[in-house]
Amino acid sequence: MTHQSLAAVLEAWAAGDGTRRAVAATVAALADAARDIAALVADGPLAGRLGAAVTENVQGEVQKELDRLADERILAAARSAPVAAFASEELDHPVVLDPLAPLLLAVDPLDGSSNIDTNVSIGTIFSILPAPADFPTFAPEPGADIEHAPFLQKGRAQLAAGYVIYGPQTALVLTVGSGTWLFTLDRRAGLFKLTGERLAIPAETREFAINASNSRHWDDPIRSYVEDLLAGDAGVRGQDFNMRWIASLVAECHRILVRGGVFLYPADRRKGYHEGRLRLMYEANPIAFVVEQAGGGASTGTDAILDLEPARLHQRVPFIFGSHNEIERIEHHHAFPDATSDRAPLFGKRGLFRE
Ligand SMILES: O=P(O)(O)OC[C@H]1O[C@](O)(COP(=O)(O)O)[C@@H](O)[C@@H]1O
Ligand SMILES: [Mg+2]
Ligand SMILES: [Mg+2]
Image (cartoon, rainbow, N blue to C red; front, top):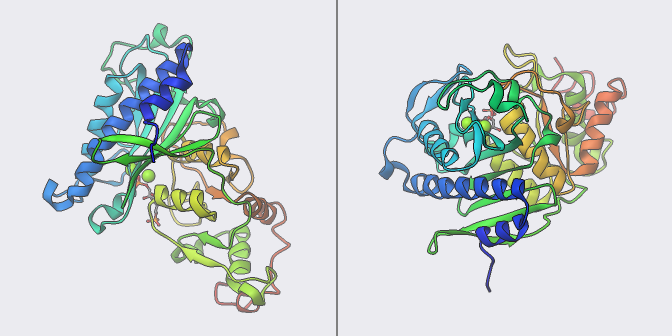
């Protein structure tokens, strides 16, 4: 079976349009960097101490060796592409690359860092935004740090977004706003090849993903929703649900794209988690774009992720996404928090998950 290469697909899509050509060149550069990162990930301990902590990043989180290497490689890729400024989870401020270029690039260079040493799937997430028209007038010299302002655009403004998953297969999932496409790395040819077009997340699901170790810190809408799922066929949902938690956002997203499901990383009452854990600009927005383009939903519980007005580059956000009908149910739990499921026997007022 022959599969079109990523380059051929991008070339056909971009033909004759300047902005599209810039997006295509940027995605191609990211794909090249991802191929290098995939090789490092596959070598694991042979490539060095990839999971060793090197320092703390701007979020106060431990930065691992592979976080740093991936960031370096993607920044180098961005330099070779028509990118005006580059922002990363690992950098406090965006860096100016080519002030006259038409695009901004925001990335989570290595997602799922806690899994680096465990041989579990990890990834890279990217978001491509238009550079504001006045960018060259206020941007300083290439190499200089800039304030966050040019990046603070709604997720709906994204021109393209996606992720690379480094798993048993390395795959690149991309949307340019007309469906979600899947490309799989052909390691022998060193090329990403088209293996899925117009991916469609099933609207219904019986699978959910949440870190249940935080259940005692959840607010009522999340608690009541999960209680309903855990009650299974004995509860209001009248059916059993399966649970997963990989702790790699990209891997959870990939599973949901392939067979449906919902993912929740809500805000909770722990210190530092009142806005959730995941970052809006380079985790939630790109994943939400990919998911919406595959027919799924992406929400804070009350608002569509892609409609949020960002305030800070590294802002966190409660993030819930996946099968469309399930996202509507979760939003319903937020809209009507009193309509909880005290009928669910295990999780009623004196239930297992009640304080
Ligand atoms: O360890 P927790 O609290 O369950 O969090 C897991 C989440 O954190 C993340 O690892 C955060 O991403 P980074 O690894 O890029 O910081 C997500 O991939 C994952 O969904
Ligand atoms: Mg991440
Ligand atoms: Mg990361």
